[in-house]
Image (cartoon, rainbow, N blue to C red; front, side):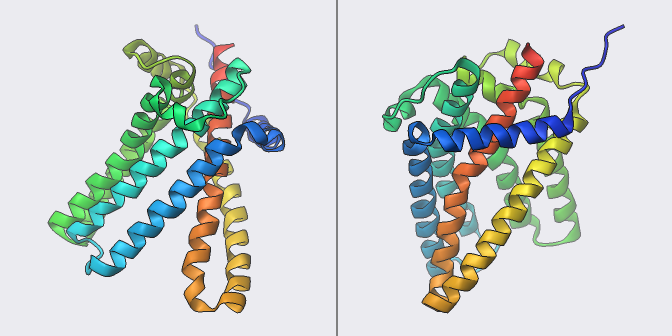
Length: 255
């Protein structure tokens, strides 16, 4: 009888933050990719917000679907940083400082496409449901089911992210991820939940304090820009923590 794999949640949680801090201390090799992600997020979301204020009149109007455009740009900008982190942990490979070259690499393109599927598709389906049937309980339940379904599948195929970063996508690797995560969905979910809650608390506290200071310094008109700036600045850290955890999980299961 096969012995179930036990994932040490507390150790995984602490090790993820420890490795993330080590990566941040190293800093310089990852700065170009992190800076590109920050600038892309700030400009893309800022331009979309300006467009939304000018043209969108209903929260579930057709124009609300245009949020996919900044999201696509942000995801493709996040891929080089995520791939670099996976390769640094799993292959001890130093990142290429020419981050623009990464956009043309197979690993980064496949990584970005995988993120698009599990980040944008459920959101688009949910928006489409609300667009067709309006804001009501039934639409909300259908959207919730879609999000839960994609989230569960995402947990099952999460190993594909580090695999794609160091190799490439294949049907065999998809099957491998499903098999490896079969009996460890709960510890993966709990660890991700704890990492997410910790990060949200830190980010919310930081945003709240800086926004309050900003409102006193710049007045109310400057709060939106300041909030956008801060949230974009936190985005590279989200990529760092998630990429570090998935790399360590793959390493733990693969060894």
